[in-house]
Length: 128
Image 1: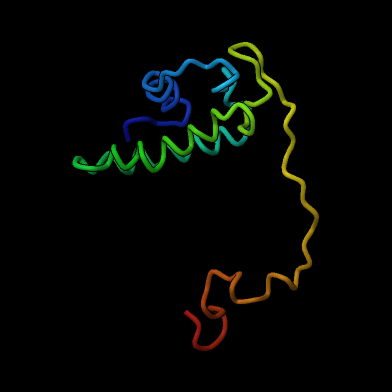
Image 2: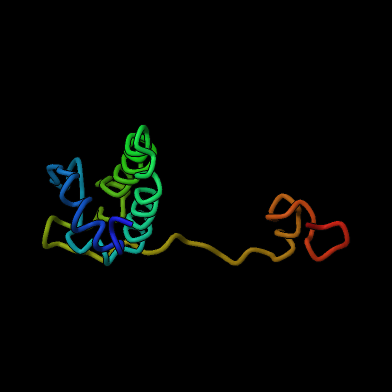
C-alpha cells in the first residue's frame, strides 16, 4: 500500500493533486470533509480503488481517474446536491443535510429470489 489510511490518502495525494477553484456556485467543498459520512465513504472507496488499480502500470491510473475519481468528485463537489452543498468555503462546515427519508419495509418483500445473493439457499439441499 502506498497510503496507510483514508486520511493519509486525502492529505498526501488527493488534496495535493486535485486542484479546483471552489466557489460554492459551481463547485463546493468542506475543509472538514471528514465530518460528512458520504464524503468519508466516497473518499475511502477512492483510496481502495487507487491502491488496487495502481498495480496496473498500463491502464490502472487512467481507469481510476475516469471510472472512480471523476464520478465521485463530481458528486462530492456538486454545489446543489452534494454533501457539501450547505458548507460555505474553507471555514463554513454545516451539518444541515440529514439522511435520506425511509420507512421500514415489510420483511416479506425481501423473500423473493431477486433480492438474494444466492441462486438457492446455501442451507438447503442442492444449495452452494
